[in-house]
Image (tube, rainbow, N blue to C red):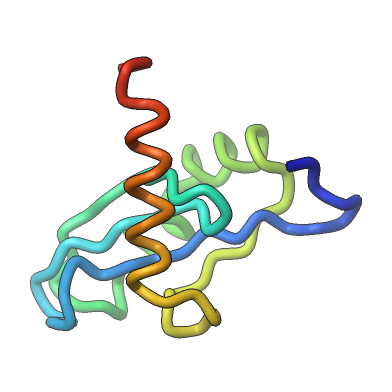
Length: 99
């Protein structure tokens, strides 16, 4: 699917569980479910910086790959955890042979 001009790629931070401390957080492409990164964070408040904003190399890589991006926690979107899991599983199933 081709993006409209000036449309940002949405990247979503998803926690592994409902526990917001000492949990793994994932950075996923909202549209496809592709997992770009994961990180064990001591608290949810660090997840954005640990996965994206505090990682200049990732910001550069994602900008080159996707253009302008927007990073949100899943609860800041209208995408459910179940829907994101389906997208992630579909992406993995379609791409697992490439690894």
